[in-house]
Length: 126
Image 1: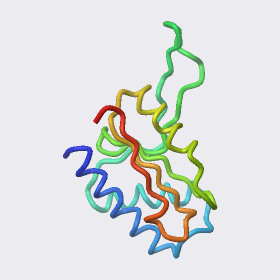
Image 2 (image 1 turned 90 degrees about the vertical axis):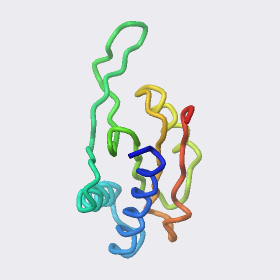
Image 3 (image 1 turned 180 degrees about the horizontal axis):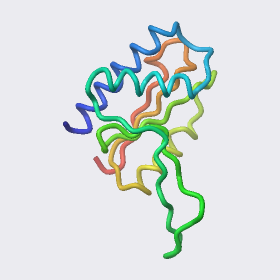
Image 4 (image 1 turned 135 degrees about the horizontal axis):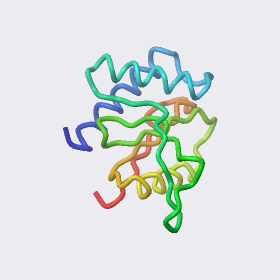
């Protein structure tokens, strides 16, 4: 499955989670877990809280980067539950994409009243 195909399926799963839970008001971890469950129900491979080593000038740092969700080993998903969007979310995700060599990421802010307003695609050379 391509990154674009995966992203469409991830967005569909996020819409279902938002609809099922009734919108904003819960913790980020709740939305993240439900999104992973929904993706699994749809037979989409998903990993949660993935540690990624960071190497700085040839030295592996002690504390790894932790990705919220990795779907199909191709798309990084950053789950948020913020009251309003912050552009730093996309900048953070772009850094994650560069560090991991992945090409596509999604910021999904379940804190938005309408989930469609809370989804942002971030591309790294795709």
